[in-house]
Length: 78
Image 1 (spheres, rainbow, N blue to C red):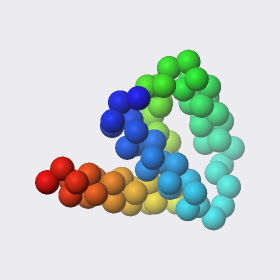
Image 2: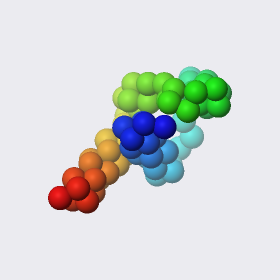
Image 3: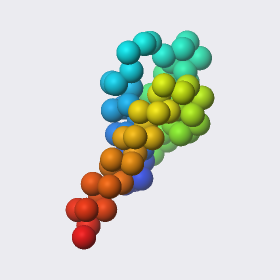
Image 4: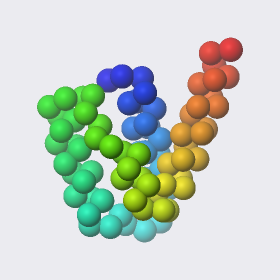
């Protein structure tokens, strides 16, 4: 898996764990499709950015996690 995909997937999964409510059915369906695609091609993470953006509570925690990871990666490479 490519490094950028790992960052995206990590931020997305961490964001999911912070939600208090279940995801809407349409988002759950999209994520199920991505999980099936990952089995075939580990680089095919779909468009998690668009999925997160389509559900505000998820997008807020996802963006926060991305920023945290970017900050930590930046500090580690210095």
